[in-house]
Picture 1 (tube, rainbow, N blue to C red):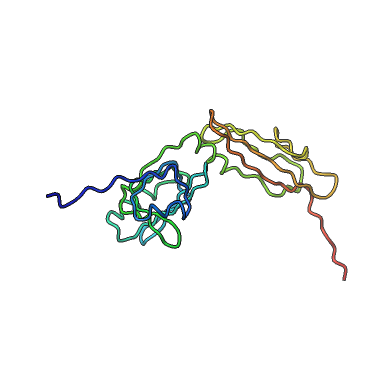
Picture 2: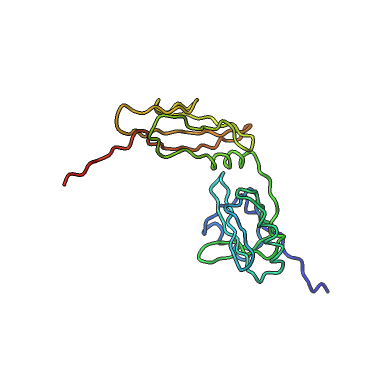
Length: 212
């Protein structure tokens, strides 16, 4: 007699929406999915904690709860702590739990696996790290990168000649302040591009003298 029955195979959530309604039928079941990134550093040494995963290509998000009492706790933090933000992580055979909303209950380090940073993910990762100043109060040149760290190509457009999208040169308006929208399109091979937009307020800050 087999007194230790085999666990059921995990259900794939790759094609399931991450909403309460869609995940409720999976509550208490083993699940697996791919294509998610680590949303923030873990850096845990003790105590229970949550890991936050997201998929920038479709907006899916989920938290994974790790209790300090779980077997192999030290192995779990040894796996997670070295990972940088936006590292790809696959979930394998974790349990769908529920605490106000859906979450994962982690039972061991085997629930995590190093994922693959696909081209779809690379364009979004490189788009997410782009930054542009919100205010420019004097003429100069903005740094508008044309390539990302994951081999992507970045092209910029501007809706106003005050910022040259090719050179990054900024020209002050004749008076007042003008909002300029910059759009960055991140491409790689044949995947759908990621687009990031930034609004920049260009112009000198008007000073007011109070009259008493």
